[in-house]
Image (cartoon, rainbow, N blue to C red):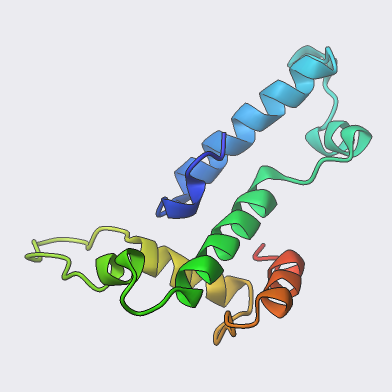
Amino acid sequence: MLYGAECWPVKDTHVKKLHVAEMKMIRWSDSVTRIDKIRNELIRGSFKVSPIFEKLTETRLRWYGHVMRRDDGHVVQRALALPEGKKRGGRPHLTWWTSMAKLLEKAQLPNPTTRDRSSWRRRIRRADPT
């Protein structure tokens, strides 16, 4: 379900849909239906599975670290520096940069040091944006 999720500008609706799909799969694998009225937390605890949003956050932060460690002349760095285009009226579109800025702020990583890979990994595994 998270294939390519590093590059999405994730919205709250995406997170809710991922959570619903994940819980459907977990309930199905445990042969539990909604009629049984068992809370999601209890089912998740019996499988010892963390919420999909935590895994999504960790994956996105890991990819951010990869991108920031690249050379300035790398294709990814050049693509991120491209201009966005003409601005239209209304609310601006959610971009990867803006969603990552919000995620870094929620995870209390405002000035990340991505150059040191091992310390970055430790920091993103402890990051809890909720």
